[in-house]
Amino acid sequence: MLNIILMGPPGAGKGTQATHLVDKFHLPHISTGDMFREAIAKKTPLGLQAQAIIARGDLVPDDVTCALVKERLSQDDCAKGYLLDGFPRTIPQAEALEKMGEEIGRPVTLVIDLEVPEAELIRRISGRRVCPKCGASYHIDTMKPKVEGICDRCGAELIQRKDDNAESFKTRLDNYYKSTQPLVDFYKAKGLYKCFDGTKPLQELLGEISAELEALK
Ligand code: AMP
Image (cartoon, rainbow, N blue to C red; front, side):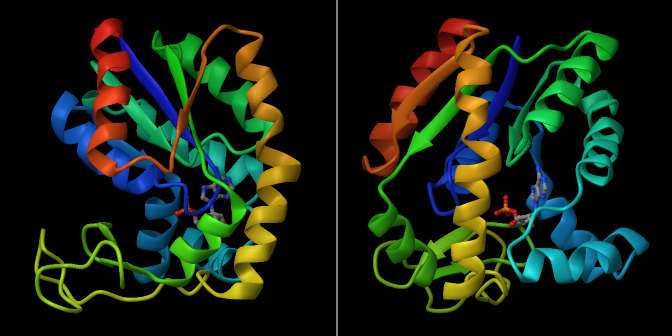
């Protein structure tokens, strides 16, 4: 079963790879970042709670995030697998996911980590533009949309994320090293971890990850 986690620092290309992988393997794309942004746009109680935390680059509390994912994973479309993008980000989240996986009979089968050097992450994040409607990601120099400022996939106007500024990025990166990187050893110990070079061209990397997923099908 394809019960996949996609991890990596901010700017590693998780969202971009996820968009292609979910199309190719017909998996639901579960991006906690996208779910939070949607809640913020809709001004739901969750959105109001998460807004300031996300804008400054901090992590939303584990209990809130885990409840959101638990609810999502229990939906019917996850019965044939799922692709988690940006979750788990802490050891307690990974432990909670393990429990959820057991409860719903869909344990994680592979953890894909995208490795990218810090200088490249900064370059990517500072030029990133995203679609607020479908979540597609672009770069002002290296991944331009066909029409400037407009999403190729859904035609919405592209924006710069509020947390894609230098200060929030630094907090996000610090949080990544402190809270998320320990997941590498956690999943290595379970034999689920696989690392990829996130600096490779999109299609090449997609091919490598796809081969890994094909073998799991
Ligand atoms: P992302 O789109 O994955 O970069 O996530 C954007 C922001 O949403 C993060 O910087 C966090 O503030 C929040 N967030 C997303 N996923 C999680 C998570 N698993 N745990 C805590 N906060 C999260």
